[in-house]
Length: 161
Image (cartoon, rainbow, N blue to C red; front, side, top):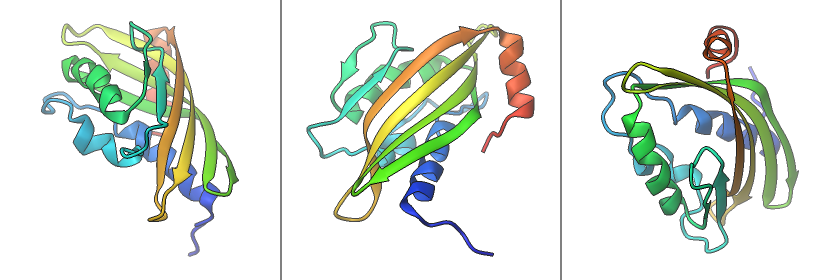
């Protein structure tokens, strides 16, 4: 068996893994952004820009640490968070930069048991560092709420890994 180890395939696989790092199961400990996701981001760069309109304050964040501080509390409060990929990552690579875009569905269960469904378009820029590892330096996620039943259907029918 051969594997596709082209930069585009590597970055596509990273983006797929990245979204599933946000998943939470009932009873999980507090969401730990650093442990789960810090390795996907360029932590040393001063040119990181991250935006996710799921943030009620719609902040533009300039570091992965700031991003984690915004989203870790929200994910800790969830009973469950499940994701499925509706459209697999599209990737363009040029030199040490890669641009990706994918669409994912989330089913988020609040502590009170209420379920929210969302569809998100996620665009990222990845940069290959001196160590050869690809890391996120730009992220823009646009989210729309969808009916809970549509999110339920996505969890049963779309790729979840």
